[in-house]
Amino acid sequence: MADLGSYLLVIDCSHSTEISVGALGSIEFEVGYYAYAGSAFGPGGLARVDRHRRIATGEHDVRHWHIDYLLGAGGISIARVETFPERDVECVLSSALRNEGVDSVESFGASDCDCVSHLWGPTSRLRLRAAVDSVEK
Image (cartoon, rainbow, N blue to C red):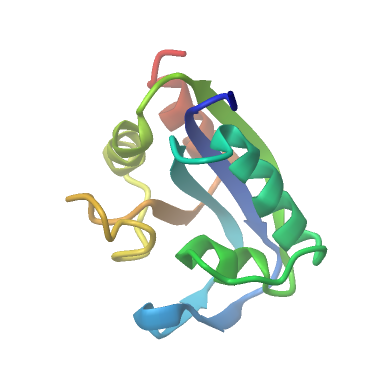
C-alpha cells in the first residue's frame, strides 16, 4: 500500500504571471515563494507529490486540481517538498501559514474544507520555514 499523508510544496514563482485556474478564473501571481498544503490519503498516497513534480517539469499536462494550473505555468518551479507521512495536517499547515501572516490566494485548493485557502504567498522562504517548523513533525 502507498504511503499516505499530507505535504507542503514550496513553489518559486520567478516572474509575475497571470494564470487561468479552472473555476477560480484568472489569478495574478507575483514574484516570490508560495506554499501549497495538500493531502494524499487517496489512491497513490504521497506519490501525488511525484505527479506535481512531473507537471512542474512539463512531463505531465493533465490539469485536475487548482495546483496543477499553477505548477504547469512558465516560470514556476517546486523549490522544496515537506511530507508528513500518516498525518492529516493539510488544514493545520494552512492555519500555520495564516498565523505567520502570509497572504492567501483565496479559495485556492480549499474547496473540500473550511480553510480560506491552501495556497499562501508570495512571501519569503524564511517565513514559510517558520510556519512549517511550527507544525511538529
